[in-house]
Image (cartoon, rainbow, N blue to C red):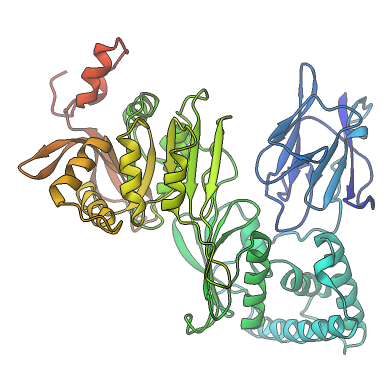
Length: 557
């Protein structure tokens, strides 16, 4: 049986694993599904993979940063014996990653280093309150003692790798436990050590929540209140931080590598984790109950329209229509409320952009995951401690026009950048995509008018509406229902301005019929029977169009 031998060391060459004899493909990352498991919050769940192709072994970068031979890489191959793969503090010995013959089926590899094994996240009310209180007391005591020991030993943690820091912290906690009274029988020493170490050098109680695939959002209200969203429903977790200082320490640990800051002068910050998850944090004095964190997780696997159809988010007819619209350069605006799935839908629609086109993405905090080869990703920058150096989305949009883009994708329009985005759509950058917060397509247009006014240009409302009507072709309304389901509830075409009012033509809609016995929304997707105006343009250009997509339920067969 053919396999591959992989050896993992630290960046300094310290071995952290024996040779693994693995079958292809080889997943590399934090997830338990990966054959080569690496730990550290900067490691994505599925960071990379090694696959066999006709000409040899190839490295596929799935998420996060990977260096090959000292250069940042999005994919590399075929691998040679001299190639070196570096993933943060780990180094994969590619000299050993050559095809070998394995006489027996490969054994499941053990973890390369002590890895925090995520436990199943319990629902509200799980566990014994008395045991949880004792656990929390011991955790707080060990954390205080740990900080004292680090201060006494004058340990420079900034100069250590994540792996070395975790190993040293584990050793210190073990020494502290030996000098403490015996633990109560209800407390597991190993689990307690893992929790203290995770809180001291990792993301603490958030690590098991981040590792569970079914969780889409994590909300820390304060040290004692942690909530999460699973399958569209909010649940409270019984786990908690030792104190507010621990929460603030984790916030600093997240934002520091990104060059962001959070303090009393700047008590709010947007950031992201190594796996791309979006993070928002607020600390006192703004947060009255204590430091709070909101983490929006994103699916590690690449979503497609087929998956959205399987989730019941849209119909096959809607998917086919949106694919044609994106491929043929319609300007699409995705509208919806907070947490409705706008960014997810934007990622899916971006899959339809041809690979030969040059794309520039612009975001406040990078969330989009586009896979086209000719891609430039730009991220706004907040001001520094002196209040200088800020680069806004509007600045980036204006600069993007000088970068010869075929399409511009703005993660979200919130202010004056809407004017620059509309001008870009009207000046040869057809097929651009963006999102906005609104409850309906009509509300979305009204919000865009307000955002254009925020640009500081004294434009008459008629001129703004003319600009909107000529720039935006389609508005896709995304809605999150009370049961947690997310659906495309309306696709409307902007057809022009009449009597000073922008006219919309509804092409598809979701008609709700009620709720099931378990509280799930029920209804059907249907076409209104109207055929979009741009379909006539496509037919004139010889593009094959399927008009059966727009047959309404009331239409004759």
